[in-house]
Amino acid sequence: MAESSRLRVAFAKEITPESVLRERIATRPAAVELRLSSAGFDLIAEMKLRSPALGALQASTDFAAEARIDAYADGGAAAISVLTEPTRFDGALDHLQQAAARLEARGPRAVPAMRKDFLVDPYQVLEARAAGAGGVLLIVRMLSRDELEALLEVALAQGLFVLLEAFDEHDIEAAIALLEPRQADMHTRNGGLRLLLGVNCRDLVSLKVIPDRFVTLAPYLPGWIARVAESGVLSAADAAAAAAAGYDLALVGGALMTHPTPQHLVEDMLQSGRTARGHRARTGLLRSA
Image (cartoon, rainbow, N blue to C red; front, side, top):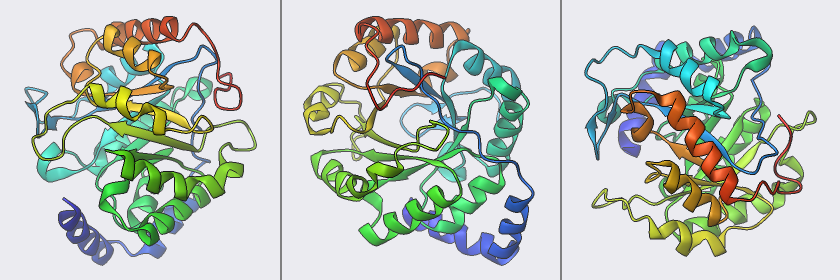
């Protein structure tokens, strides 16, 4: 996937030089900031047409984003993750642009769109910003320290939040080494959250979900960073379990994409997660929306 992403970047740079992306960015409003609730648990709801583990999640390849994005945002999601990887997830940058535009149109009720992809080059961060994203996901396992530094620097300079994704304790250690010197950059001047650390409980080889990984790896996650449970959160009970283990957010994709009333599932997950956390806001991490 990393190699495929590098090929995509090379092609994209030939079509659209970085200077053109920066010109587009200069005409855009400030990125929508990520703001978490003081209730103690939040959700990043995901838009994707396909998953390598689950197959097609929508009967049509038409993104048809508007109704689902509204459902996610109306349900209380703090951000909307959008898959832009084309070969395994049927994603596209156009999907991100559609989602971001729809969310921006909500005005004061806007929440950010996050580009989720196998990002390997700072150019892709600029692509995300030019498309209207408020954040990006970076996979720790896939990148060198220097590559992560470069991507992170561009993202923060562009006003984007960054979710670093880890799969085991070694990834977490690498992420902490990267983030610890940046604790002063944790929030924007307006109180928006800029840095998060996620644990993905899906095995990279078998693609099977290992739910116990959330509990096993929770002690490795420092309290000064917002912690995200990724993959395997399928129900309100799963959200409650993640919250009880100490996670501040869950990133939920497949369950929401296949649910007949996604807004209700978002609401149920948030209620269960917040109840499990006992409505205890984490000082310094959770800011009132």
